[in-house]
Length: 595
Image (cartoon, rainbow, N blue to C red; front, side):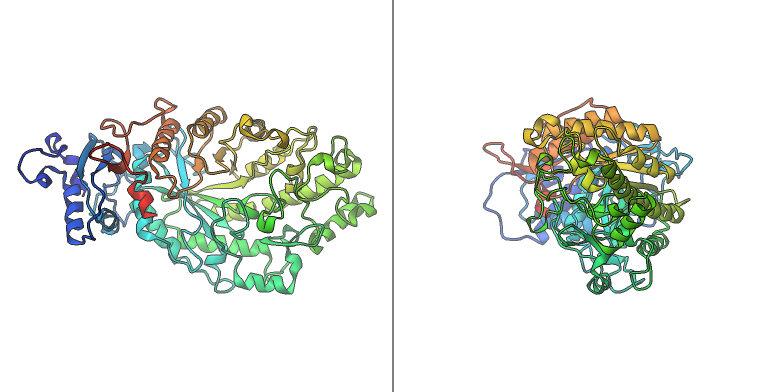
């Protein structure tokens, strides 16, 4: 298939003469047609032809050396646009190509990276210096499922190649604690993730791998259920206080309470020891890929992998937007810490409980005594409590990241941590939703500077969400300001001299969202952007074309903003159907059909 780059210009159109049309089709397409004829399914009743547009400078048809731990520099070649009769077994043919073993190639020099960029590692062994902002794409949450196997492997291979053709730098995947250590303490099953790493390497992409110590299920966008390891749930049954608890006594099994970080509550080990052993085993298993294929390790620090408390859980309708949420400090370990802090402050009575007037999950700030304009949050007691509550979160992040830094130091990977973009009620004085999540950010107190400073101590990138949002798109009654929030976090990152990366908080495919991300990336100097998420909708017609244009905008500073339907000079990848009579294409590309 790699001979596609050498196709003669005269071979790029289907002949209208009486000769066999297949003889005029470039070799990979003839191969696909032969596969289709050999493994044909009943013919489709749909008439028309299939259009493929490929830019071979980033072509997914170029094979990679499976023995190499480096990425490959593709060669430039003119693009090609051809039309061929619709093959009834087109999808199985593409899958067969994705599964076929690649032809051997010469390994590139050590200085070569994806998209022909030269590696200039910084002193810390982090990201290479490059133009523009590299774009990564989050893989589905169940890419490696509860049983430890790669899900929908053939569809995934096709999708990875499509992403590479679009110019994407790599993909992000959750490395679930509940999957890897499901068999028992210290018994790690990395095989599904090892297969995924090899697939990503063959596709010529890079990986951001998230140490996901949280449960999947019960939050925005959660499409599957992956609980904490069974043996951890056994410990939870024996001691329910090892997870976060609200004022009403509701337990949240998403993540182990940071109140017991240093206590041996998990079969004789502390949670921080368990996280450390897990990361150390990961490092040893994937040592040959760290710093090359595996470019980044994001360290999970709370629910959804974010450094925060689970103050706004959607499960069972507990919370709904734009509720203020609730403080999560009522397990016995958090209460013991609060009591000790109150005694040390000389106000023992302040440690008996959390605020009594903080309201409930779905309320608004002005409906509570604590969060209203001049509420308890602005008193001496309010300052004490919020400083303790946010300080506990910072100490948790500091402990886990210190362990990660010691484990991954010298491997060449970048460390990152995610901070949630809690933008609702930002325009109020108290910033109630941020306070319950653990960010002591009010009209008079900056809650993001100490977070950025903590991350800077460990050389960790600050990954922030809601980069796609504009103030004008938010409901007026919610007091939202994602744009001002991003500006504040950007300022905190700059002051602390820490790199800032970004994500979109919600699935968006419109040009407004992409334009907002590009503008934010330029203004904030993002080191990378991770797009949420790869699924069928992403590969759907206009969504895909807008996404490809967005990736180019991030790479070249916005020189190009749109892609035509079939552009033989510039487009990276389009796979769809053109009706012979109406010249209309089907709504899905091959990658979308594969998912």
